[in-house]
Amino acid sequence: MVVKETQMSDQIPDNSKNSIKSFERALEDSKKTKYVLHLYVSGNTKRSTNAILNLRKLCDEYLKGRYELEVIDIYQQPSLARQDQILATPTLVKHLPLPIRKVIGDLSETERILIGLDIVKDQA
Image (cartoon, rainbow, N blue to C red; front, side, top):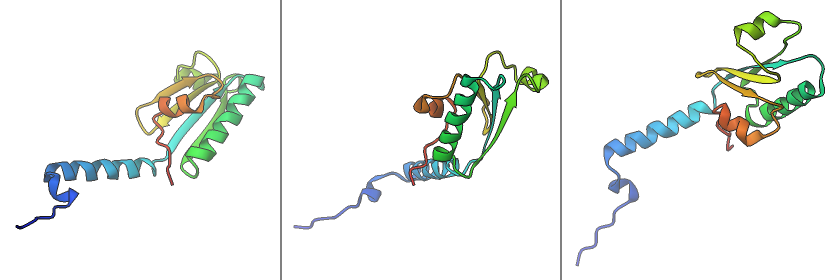
């Protein structure tokens, strides 16, 4: 009697192996992606302060070393608010990586923010 041993990789078709490798590569690249974020606030209000603190915490935890954040006061720079079509504050705009995404609120719900901005958690 002859018993043939097969490995799991022998059972996966070549095109599927390539797809898996492509997916893994894309996932790794997404963990290196730099994020460009603009947080629009309205003066020195409690909601603005909370949004800034929540966003900094989120960025330090999930985007450490790979984000650029600009906090914009709509009273000081109304033209930027018009340019980004800001209707309420606080509003976070993710400019890069594309697509552009917007999240309105104090940014206290971390999971929703990560999903809304397409941020991949770094598992390292």
